[in-house]
Image 1: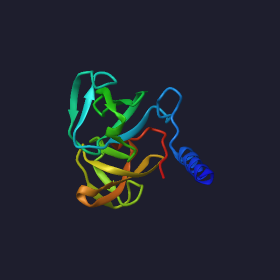
Image 2: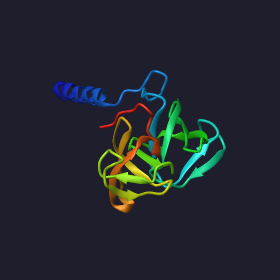
Image 3: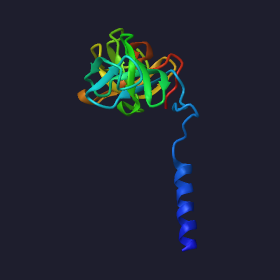
Length: 166
């Protein structure tokens, strides 16, 4: 019986050690600002951090990149590409990195160079998975169109200016 107790407490301690750490104030401890994406097809944007605050907007686009600009307990203050800010519950966000084309650039290249062959032409607002970013170029995979290529960082919304992704 004593042996079982120690095995169970040892297992509990191991599970506790493997659990993600959170800051003392209830925030994630992750850097702010940072980019994430919407986890669901329908996400309520509230005027404050809680269900008692009114819904200001409803996002209807799975994978939309948003920027976390604040945290309060289980709530994240986000900003979208148009500058709208509000609060969403952390369960509505995903760490999956996506980016949206902003219309300044309309080409995906096969290599990270404007002299490389064009892989595809893209419209503003196309969302893709952000695969890598280094310097002025980011690799974007657009599953809905079955295309992947390189785009100049300034043609995307969803990545910080000096951020490197590998």
